[in-house]
Each structure stands twice: as C-alpha cells, then as structure tokens.
Amino acid sequence: MKKAFLAYFTLGYPDLSTTEEVIKGAIESGAKGIEIGIPFSDPVADGEIIQHAHHIALTKGTKSNDVFILLEKLGPYREKADFYIMAYLNSIINAPEGMDIFLKKAKNLGVKGLIIPDFPFLEAKRSKIKIDFPLILFATPDTKEDDIKEYSSYKPPFIYYIARYGTTGERDTLPKNLAEKLIKIKNLIDVPVYIGFGISKPEHIQTLYKIVDGVIVGSHLIKLIKEHEEASPKKIGEIIKKEVKRLLG
Image 1 (cartoon, one colour):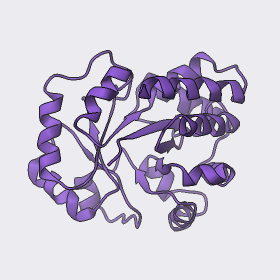
Image 2 (cartoon, rainbow, N blue to C red):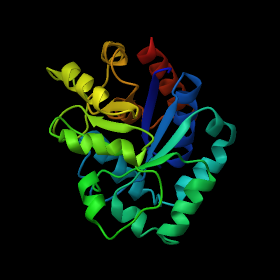
Image 3 (tube, rainbow, N blue to C red):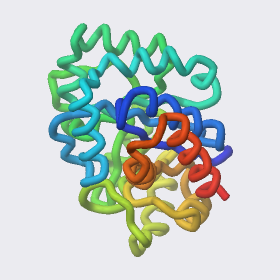
Image 4 (cartoon, helix red, strand yellow):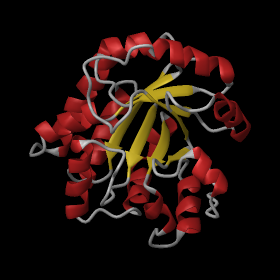
C-alpha cells in the first residue's frame, strides 16, 4: 500500500478561490487526500493558526454549502485524490438544507468520509444523532485497546491518530514513545492508520511512513497561506504546491 499524504485546508481561507488553488497545488505535488475544514465559530480542537483561518473565512461569509460548489469546480481533481470534510457537529446537523441533504450532496460528489472533532467514538455510540456516512474515528495515546479493536467493525476509511494532547499546531519534534504506540495500534486493527497534529517537517513524514499508512498536515500549510494572505490565489497555490513537494521529498 502506497503511503498517503493528506493536506488540510480551511474552506474559504483567505477566500474560496484560494482554497481551490491550494487544493489543486497539493494534489499536483502528490497529496493523495484532501481534508476540507468547514469554518466554525468555536473550533475547539484547533490551535491559533487554524482558528485564525476559521475566523477570516467566516468574516468573508463562507457557508457550509460552499464546500459543494468548490468540489464541483475541482472536477477531475476529485479523481486524483480522496476528499474528506472536516466539520464540527453543529455545522452538519444545522446545515442550511438539513443534515440529510448535506450528506447526500457529499456522497454524490465523492466525499469519502467525515471528520468530526467534537463527536468522538464513544459519544457517537451513545448519541441519538445518527450520521449515515463513513466517519473517521479518532485514537489518542489514552484510547482503550477494546475501543480500538472495535473500530475495525465500523470499517472507517482510516483511523485518525492524534499524535499529542492539545490542539492542532506545528511542532519541532515528534512525541517520545510515539513509534511504540503506533505499532501497538497497527497490531490491534486492520484499518489504515493516519496520524496528525504537529507534523510539519520532511523528516517527521519519512519517520512516520515507516509505521503508519498516512500523515495529515494542516497547521503548517495554513501558516504558509497566512504568511502570503495578500497574494493572488494562483500565487498561493504555487507556494503550497512547492511546499508539499518539499515535504514529500
């Protein structure tokens, strides 16, 4: 199985045209997956960089349904990479046309799964809210082995392993004992394991590729966009294209 690189971008940051261009750039440089984050007023799982992106996108009037307009524009790029929607639960259940229509549109446009940070596995099991769509399940250093084993029965597109406690954001080093924890999880399940939170360097990726099936990079790419926020969408797209190529080596 070829290792996957999944790039995260906030929908509408700094505008929808830029989101389109950075996605194209990432895919052209080898990204096999794209995570599109729907902006939310209280993104509790995200650090300062992505919080800023959410704020700007909302200020510009970005709506959850804009993700479908974007996906339609991306056309053939949807055949080159897997697309996932990251959204906080309220954005899905209170989508303008209702949750069922939102999920139907996502399915029709080939979205492979939903990443919902504030709807973890145990809560989803107990909740009266039933989301009829593949959910990306989270694992952390504290997730119980029995829960991880149970993940396989749900057949998620992949397990999202959160590398460290706290919010998203760039880090210089990987956590200690990370390899040991990842190998343990890989031995417990037959579902692909992707890792995110704090990955920002080529050496991080090459180290992790020896163990997991994919890596997720978000804050590092959003920081680059922030540094060039006033540039044209095409220019920012080229910057992201070069950076993804550099990260993948």
